[in-house]
Length: 297
Image (cartoon, rainbow, N blue to C red):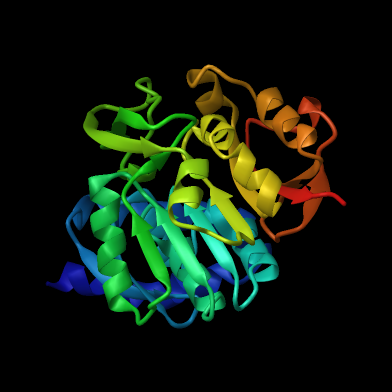
């Protein structure tokens, strides 16, 4: 009982420290130690916490993404993306969250686009259950959850979810192309795949303002299944690009870049502050980054 109270007592301190960016180089390693410690001693401990001031989410301290939401109020990898969602999603906007996970960005989108509509695509049983619960904690009536993955063809596939990432379970690394080198165990499940173009046609979607894609290596295949949609609506797209994930999927970062260039999109790297730097070639990319893809006139 005492141990279960400690995270709630420490949380205001850890969140306060993360707001002072100049302290990050000195204190971040200690925050990671705190996260790893409680992931071990309180493996099944869960708390409903608040992010973005008013959004409530259930967090498990032994989960990689959820522990960051609890201790920091945000996920490190999504800091810049989060800022750009605020920038590019209008109040009446249509937002497609492809690879919604537990719904942290889905819920942010629902808050911003209060007069719009959010479509959250998440094929995993585990994440769908977490996302559904998080939706129930909030009063958003503008979210549609689609328990399917997006790909370049309709069908079924096996999704692999690693159970551990060092001391913290990184369920967010679920992929059709698993990295067996870092996963001690792999859970797997059959999922349904659809094409973005087919979904848009069947649901009579008339507009898309913003798309976020983070699907652990399947990004290129999802884009190929949505060419007609992208040409028609010309949305702003926020996409994760991880070289290792793409390699396991049999494609490269050059494939992603050329896809966007062919559609006359400007591609830029996103930093943690939401600032962007244009990408002119594959040489401008690192191993892992988030990209802003903007249609050009």
